[in-house]
Image 1: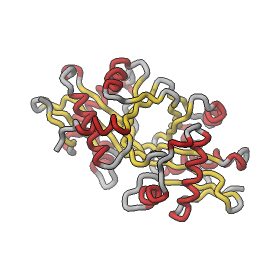
Image 2 (image 1 turned 180 degrees about the vertical axis):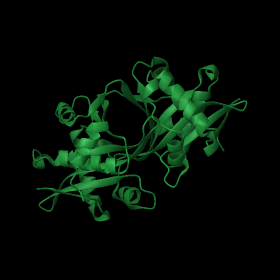
Image 3 (image 1 turned 30 degrees about the horizontal axis):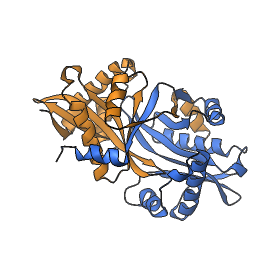
Image 4 (image 1 turned 30 degrees about the vertical axis):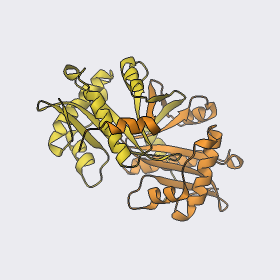
Length: 161
Length: 161
């Protein structure tokens, strides 16, 4: 039986390993620019940008769920689940579902009206799993992003002092 | 020429009006459950869930941009632009672009590597506008959400004490 707990600073190496494993699964192994220093500062420093749950299985970290607050101008406080991942060798034991339920429980406790996350459209096993938990897919919405030089250029044109 | 500034508590009625106008445009006028009290508490209370820029045109609020920090486990600190809206009678004057540039400027100032937002797939004028600013559409990703009874049910099964 796995045990779910909040991550501590000593889990940083494990979290980073799980982030890399998830990126590999998402077919983007080279997209991870995260460092242990950044992860420590942003999760356990003065200003906290994320929270993280670890699922331990016989003392080994088998999976994680990383989330943060977001805001809906229609429904107010919500939680966004950025990463949910269980190592392949620990799958089929309900660990992913236990992590997701725990994040849902935290969302409810904090008065959030929504819990949301993103899924790759080709990841049918994940979509089936989420639908079995009564999650809806918002098929009309697409994500837009500016990053790198495009962000720098756009930012340079901001006028607020 | 419009002037862009951070919203203050006295802007709450205007922000709420703009939120309703945007929901109308998105064909979901009845989805707004937000109240002035909630908006005040969540934007200007002890814990802040969003920030908001207002574009004034000759002393009238012509549009707004509402955003908050998010976190990427690949690239770190990022900003999410939840709402960007300009009243129809003020369009065609570059106000939307000025608001977006200002949010980009805040993102860069805060060391964010990404600025992102969501767009409805049928909103071609918006998509064209965003692409003209070198934003990319992440076509592979879909949003999943649990809310209402489904969230309550999932939350009830969380096991963390």
